[in-house]
Image 1 (cartoon, rainbow, N blue to C red):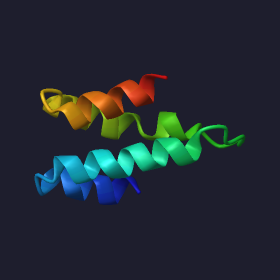
Image 2 (tube, rainbow, N blue to C red):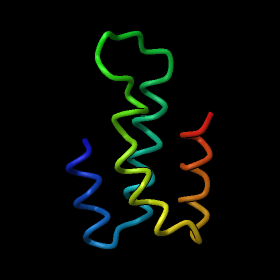
Image 3 (cartoon, rainbow, N blue to C red):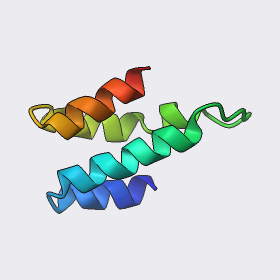
Image 4 (spheres, one colour):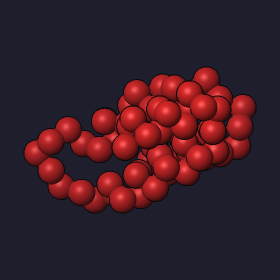
Length: 67
């Protein structure tokens, strides 16, 4: 998933990247696993999205990631 989102970011498809990230966050809610938490695994994507924090979709997904 991270590779696909990074590709979207590289291509300038910020809204698509935020939609995919939001979907991943929603699906990961409440997942119990011994592997690193899904939200932790999305940290590099969140970092890349911060460069576009002027876009409402980015603000929304970054807020979603914080909760």
